Structures are given as structure tokens and as C-alpha cells.
Length: 430
Image 1 (tube, helix red, strand yellow):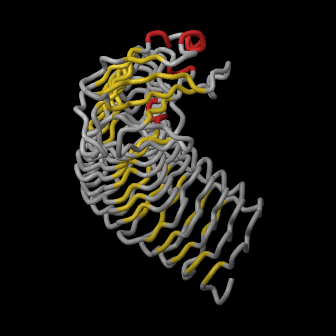
Image 2 (tube, one colour):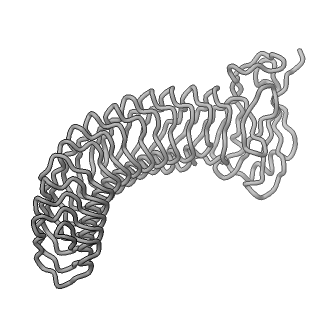
């Protein structure tokens, strides 16, 4: 000790002889890793004089069961009680305290803790891996919850997020396998990456009315989620945001959404409706990859770019798509009458018809009398028939007033990936 005012960093680190520790009165601070891995310490008394407890001070003190933090303590640094695997109860006496990242992470036996009502920020990973924590009161003043704060809190069933909340971090409730309901306050504008990944019993989700973005994997593998109402303030939904939500039957994608990433609904075996929002600009073709019950897919006229290989559900029978083309870079755009290339592979074999529509808001070089065009591709249900039927050019004349459609097999071969069908749309002379 230094003048009886502090305990030095690592001073008792790994001391297995310590059983019951009473820190003397007058000590102001406990240094970093001061009692780390004192694996036989089962009792600890911290006096009212202590103001600061350093990083990892009691890390892996695996026999500690109860801790009282006196009101004099103003800061608990990172990892202070991390992996105190038998710690069951923590009582924080003060009203004002700063908590560092992962202060109680992997305290596997922790069941009860009170947080001061004055706390405004829940730090990263504070209760990460506390798989016996069933309930916690965050207080009314919390505005931010850090990354992984409640990650893998497997016993947590319900948690009330305060109205003042503005930020929810990445993977904040990831792996909370018993969480059943969550209501996101209106101050939250982003659901960050993986926030609710693996919440396998989550069934009721109420989203913020001011939400702007749902990031990658936000609700990945929430297998009990059967419906969700996305507010009309959302403009972007990230990759696999609702992937493997296997009970999800219906989801409204609001008109405000202009960008959808890949695999958003990957593995959603009960999703049946695939109508995309009317203002969508960017789309990855694999949005519905694995949604095997989806049978109708409607692409809005607003689409200007489609990326990714076509990967469609096996039950799909109708695709409604603007008159666009797939070029070698798999980008989609049409500003005049041109050629529509559509790749047929395994995933297209169940398609019974393509509906090629007028592309609203795009001026062709010469203005034909556009009408909805239906292209029957029943012959393409089995890929081998493409090789037999489409060896030559087929003229389909009555496809719409003023238009002629030509379908031609390009690069006929036995490889699904390399086969391509070209659809030419041309103006017909009167």
C-alpha cells in the first residue's frame, strides 16, 4: 500500500491464500487487477472511503457470492467483476456511479442487481453472458445501451426500455433465448446489427415510430416471430434482417423503404407475399432467398438497380418485373426499348410466367403504345426443356399493342449458371 491510501495494481493477483478480505478504512482506490484470480476469496468488504476500483480488480474471483458497492465509489472500471462465476447478488448503494465495459460480464450466477436511477448510459457488454439474470430495472434516465450489453442473458424474459432511450447497440440482446416481448421507444432511430439475433422465443416486437434503419441480422433467427409492423419512416433494411424467421407469414414493407439488402427474408419458409415497396430503388435479387412458400413476386417500377444472382423460391409461379435488362455486371437499368436478359437456373424452373410491365417515369427514345406483357414460360419448368424447345428464335407477336417480343436461348449448354435467355422488345411497324 502507498501511505495507506491505495492498493496497488496486481498487488494480490493470484493469491490463493486470501479467503475473507476486509479492505481497510481510508483506502481511496483499488488498482488494476489488484485481486485478480484470487480464486478462494469468498467474502469481500469494501469500505466507504473507496472512490475508484480499477480495471479487472476482482476479475475471476470465482467464489465471491455477494458484493456491496458503497456510495463513496464513483467509478467501476472495465472488467472489475468479470467471470466471478458464483456472484449472485450485487448491491450498488450510491446514486451516482460510472460503470465501465463488461463490469459484470460472464457472472453466470448473477440473478439480482440494482442500478442507480441516475445512470444514463449502459456500457458495452456490462451483463454479457449473465445467463441467470431474469430481471433488471434500467431506470427512467437511460438514453443509451451499449453493444452486447445483455448478450446471452439466457434467462431474461422481459425488459422495459425507458422512454428516454435513443440508442441500442449492436447485438445488445443477441442470444437472449427466453426474451418474449420488446417495445422499442420512439427515440430510437436505428436497430443496429444483430440486436435481437437468436431471440428464439421473441414473438411480440413493437418498433419505434421514428425508426429509420434496420441493420444486418437485426432479427435473424427469431423463429417465433410471426408478424411485424415496420413504420413508414424506415428507408433501409439490411442483409438477413429477418432471415430464418421461419414463422413469419406477413410483413409490411412501407413505402418509405428505398433500399433492400440481400437475404433479408432468407429461410422464411412461411412467407407468401412478396410485394416490394413502390419507391424501392436498389434491390439485391437474393432478398427472398430460401422463402420457399413465396409464390408471387412483384417488382415496382421505381427499381433502377438489381444486384446479385437470381435465387428464387421453389414455389414461385409469377414474377412481375419492369422492362429492364440484366447485363454482365448484373446491374439493371432501362432508359429506352432494349433487350431484357433474364438468366434461368435451378431457381427459375418453377416460374410459370413473367409479367413485363411498362416502366413508369422512364422516357423511351420513341414512345410506343406500352401495355402489360405476359410471357408464358411453362415450358421452362424443367430446365432440360429449355435446351430442347428454345434452340431457335420464337416470335410472339400478340404481346401488346405496338410491341413484338422475341425469345431466344443464348449459350445453350448443360450448365444452369451459364444458360441465358434473351428477350428482345421491339416496336412493330403499323
